[in-house]
Length: 142
Image 1 (cartoon, rainbow, N blue to C red):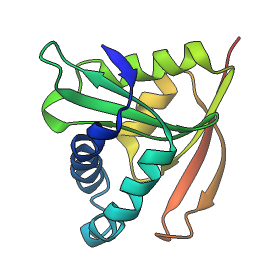
Image 2 (image 1 turned 45 degrees about the vertical axis):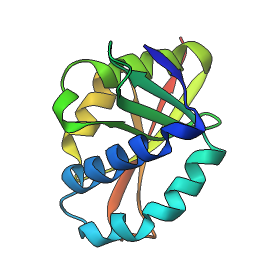
Image 3 (image 1 turned 180 degrees about the vertical axis):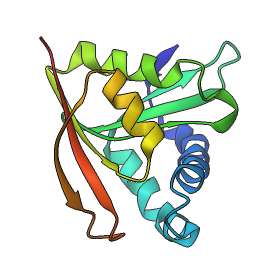
């Protein structure tokens, strides 16, 4: 089930955020993610976030939005490759006319996922915070 995040979900989604970022972005020092965790928790409270819960009401993943911008899709490691990320993207596609995002060029798995979901690479830039190359991608309702 997908639902809007509640305040008491913060610890669960924060753990998923940290674990997933460290694993998916092994080209970035893990201290970068750990050092930013507390400020990200504050941002979660101000963001539009939808969580995916399994049948036992355990959060397995979430998608964070800033208007039409996907700040991130995060699925806990044990639940990856089970269609949760796709369900979260499909949910957002129903409520947004267009969606854009940035993804690190080194995160080839995520790039392939977004391309399967009909996102197109629009341009390439450097992330100021990490110095890593990233793509800007976009999806529009047809």
